[in-house]
Image (cartoon, rainbow, N blue to C red; front, side, top):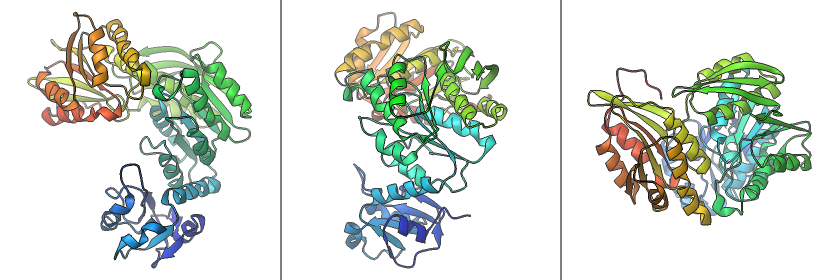
Length: 477
């Protein structure tokens, strides 16, 4: 296996000092002692909840070839004999390595932000660009102050396309990250009420997202959703940041990359995309209009990078939903089966509405029901009661008559639904998980969604553990 970094390069770039006989180099980088691979370097990052230095022994036992530790923690390392690079601050050292990775790379780089759709768009780009060259992208939603530098530092020197997701909870968080990534294209998927508790309004969220334009390289492009009310604000911000090419995607008649038409069902969708004047049919393997909108951003990047568009279209037809973001499971129950739509990764008002629409597109079988299994949307601040109440309208408009809820904020939705809707409400996720397992029947279609902090993955796992994958149908996940 080829080396990602030589030990000499790492030591010099990170301004560290070697401790022990360093290997020639490393094949990868990990911050998780449990999943580290043979020949990889373990960076002992100190996080909000755990300190990687406490898990150095586990990393060594699991095959770490090299560990990166902080000078101040060295006395506590005891008799650890694995080679080390000792630095002042491990996260800062990772950042230095990330900057070096970007500096040595000749890849075309795209950075994606937005209130909704970042990870889905990143995965679409991974699929769509792969036929045209080696793609490097984060393995998960690594979009914060450690995830972005980690993804950069992991980027092989022979990468042809680099795809980076950049997130934020507060103003000022995107700026230093995009300064590392230095993209050729910066994408804003949409602006919605995510993290609204930390901002005055949606315009303020848009201003924070617009920081991504500050890192665009000379001659690069900004790609903005033309359908959102904050388009003008983002357009002006991109121009103020000196971006030379400000382009748009969406359904708007003036969009440079236009979603001309859409047909969707429970298994996928077909769109007609007008790309630089030519309209073409594109099949997408994942369902949902919001997925189609993200696909337009991905196709636009393919065009801007002059990659193989025909191959990109074929790749999107094979796209599968990302885990926790629409992944579908068919589970056996009794003599039939039920359909489980896993939207458990995170939630805000916009993604909730998209998931409800996705549930509405699924037709239950036999005497089954469409069931929305919903948990709190976090970080809504003073707006929390209102945004939870407002979900009632989306549920009623979609014809959803069965709603199972958990979390203190979801009490507002419970109280806003009419008697025509059958509601089950619980204060905690484990209670709702037990209820879900005991209450499903053949033919049911369940969509499970909440903010990550509610732990709704437990509901998904409980259902999968209690009901086997349905053997008589092709799995969708």
